[in-house]
Amino acid sequence: MQTLTRNQQIVFDIINKSSEPLKAYTILSNVQKKGIKAPPQVYRALDKLIEMGKIHKIESKNAFVACQNSSCNVSKATAFSICESCEEVTEISNSKISKYLSNFAEKSGMEYKKYNLEFFGLCKKCK
Amino acid sequence: MQTLTRNQQIVFDIINKSSEPLKAYTILSNVQKKGIKAPPQVYRALDKLIEMGKIHKIESKNAFVACQNSSCNVSKATAFSICESCEEVTEISNSKISKYLSNFAEKSGMEYKKYNLEFFGLCKKCK
DNA sequence: TTACATAATGTTATTTTATAACAATAAACT
DNA sequence: AGTTTATTGTTATAAAATAACATTATGTAA
Image (cartoon, protein in one colour):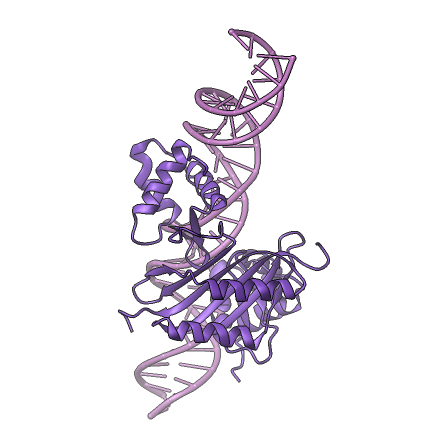
């Protein structure tokens, strides 16, 4: 279990506490009082945290969430459902989907490393 | 079958002819001789073409490809494999995956509208 | 046709997202 | 201690996307 550096910890904490995905510049403006002053500092921390599997990027929103899945396959397989009304993002941890998709990738002839899946629609509350 | 407007046709043609995903500003610089001079003109055409299901956006690359799938479910379900070495992007049209994932979404309690799936790894040539 | 509404276009400026480049520190290694 | 490697700090810039508003074209109904 890798320990986080100072900046990584600061950035992780704010993402982890948030109930919604955070954008890089929102993170930046929230950590400036802690001494992180410029975009590269944030983006570098984000890159490392993604590498470690501690956070994920929601590609369709350019936003970042903490991994909710304690047994997360070190970011090799990520899946989210995204509500188009309230913007709620939920990480899906379903081992069947993950097996199904990894198997598919293996069979397709590519050397598979990871996938990202994003569902869009209306969540229970909004539909 | 909707007909394309002038700008939509110009933008679609260049994407459709390309063997790789194109970025918005690459498209722009390639259509300036045809009278499309500014980013909003490109982005507006891209938005409409996506709506129609004629092209898809590769979210992880901010790039656009023509739909390869004549029976494409009007962009409700998109899946791609992306080679991390040569950057080749292939659209996957597999009705089993699409049924499997739509079913999953329906059962999850959300009102499902669409999904996007991106596989990463090495293609046959590069592995 | 004319009048009205709607969609598409043209244009300038700006916002948002992300990285290049390089100097300075800190941590890990031998 | 000295050397390598990772992390940080900083300035500037690149890349991706949109806001806002004026103009032109297209569709539609009296």
